[in-house]
Length: 284
Image (cartoon, rainbow, N blue to C red):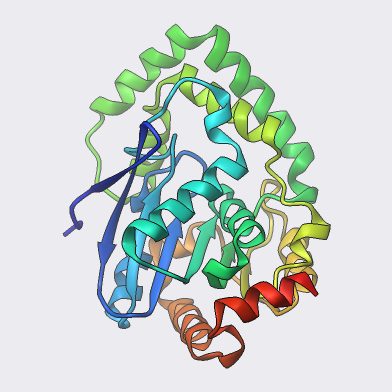
């Protein structure tokens, strides 16, 4: 059973989220590019079953959140502000962030911009330097199709919305992604590109929060070299291999103990108990 959708106004626009579990130990989940939050449904259920308060969010352009006109709504800086606004709304002074793909980049951007709000990071398959050639090759057709081929793409989206599906399944996630308005998707993609999808390496090296990096092989959009490199770049990073990008979608049971143990360590770590200490560690 999915929890009810909740919404929060950030400026004039609406982001969406849901909550599972309860308690003081919170983790906020951010899905992959334009994906619905149910991308993390099985993982969220497993984390909540292990005693965590789990918040699954959809920033602007993702899932059921608003998709306002204007590429400037979709930069990494704007997304980081949306995460912080949600933490404020929920009364979370600090939390652990878990992001996948573009959601991982949003988590990293938030940790750089507001280190005092982040106890720890679970970064699954970020989009970093080795991914840029593949991302560029995929982005150009997407921008052209969304901008100049919108009627065709909109027809495909209408068909995608009519296809029966099991919510949370891989076909459901793909169809949900296809169902978005193509012009808004093109604008959002333009915003991510123009604002810089990468959190620069020198900024990543300032991250002092505990960081668990999850990656897999044979994926040109999420090369494992970037995952291992990120774990080495941050001050307290650790790498854990996944079998594929689908593992945490289909069968997260193998990795859940490592993730829940890591989150518990983040909350128990005396070095991260004080927001002031975290901010000071970045300034040194």
